[in-house]
Image (cartoon, rainbow, N blue to C red; front, side):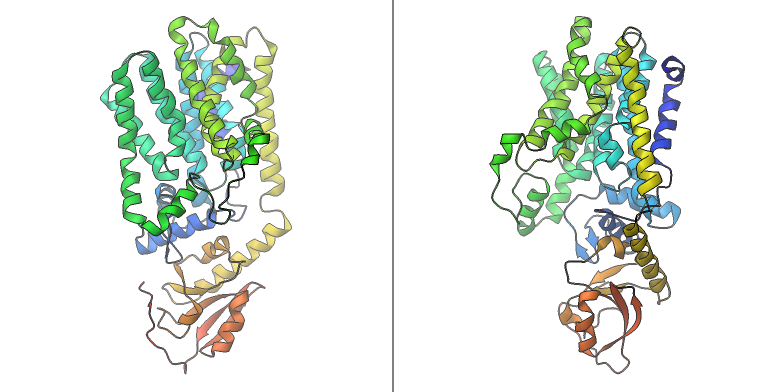
Length: 480
């Protein structure tokens, strides 16, 4: 079966990736940070906040803009900012990352290259990290695939002895998009071997060229940082990059080092092909001397930053996701070398694929859109969408100051929303309608200038300005 599938491994990997990640992409309502991504896209499409990101009319600096650019592009093509627009970029980049892993593995072995390509691609798609994150509209899978694609270009060209300006430009472009997705830290995973391997081989020109490409790749992100971050919020972004302690918990708990923090969980997330990748480290000696350095490069890609991003007190297992790509390539190489001799090499391919199918059947078939909480949330979202669709066109203000504030719910408005403060209820806010959260309904009712026109389940209501209510110009006034 492996031999048959390997004949057209590119097509097989694409079909399996599509089967694992595309079905019913819009069934589960928005969750985690997806609402913020959708609201950023709405601001872009209706207000032009492409460079200075906004969420509900307020500045957003937690992440650079590449992921919302992708979401906005898909939303523009299909005509709506919905679950598919939010999640499809991650799925597409999962497919790109799998093909890059397969191509790299195929180029690094001497025999059974198509088997290496097949297994490398499947190992990437079947990783626990990918299974948990690909169908969520966040930045992790995108940046993992971009870093892997850049490294695939580097290692393939270097193996063929022809690293040229076009290769460096392509590598810099991939890294630039990665930096504009999640900042510089994920790029350190592939950057370490791209600089270290040429230095160890005394090819100093290649090391300098790699450093130049990596530096150039950070210029767009640097420009965004310079133009968006003031002195007051630069510290906040340092927290987002995990290079500073959390504002809410300024003291660092160094006792986490005693149990390696999230490193054991990170190893679990790299399963089920991690054993094959580890075995390749030992099988390195079986390769011709001139073909051993790629194994060293892939190990340098996977190991140092995985340790650094998971063992430190501020580390998390999910920060090690870029390591999925080199683990997949190493697994593809090892299986291609051993599948004719060792039953385990063939077994791990089938077991990994079966495990991935089971995980996705449970997630998609039994969880997505089917729990009571998701059904209730979907009902609230549809109610909000229908209610706002009946209002006159234009942006609508929102007052919702409690802790139960829900970006994911407000993303279903289908139009621009912007936050106002309680003190601005009597101001010219740009419209005669107001979305109010549950905890603020008493304040709006007491104001007297608004009357409720439609309740929104148990979480809020839509109000309309009373015809007799005086309207003043308050500072700061909203400027749509």
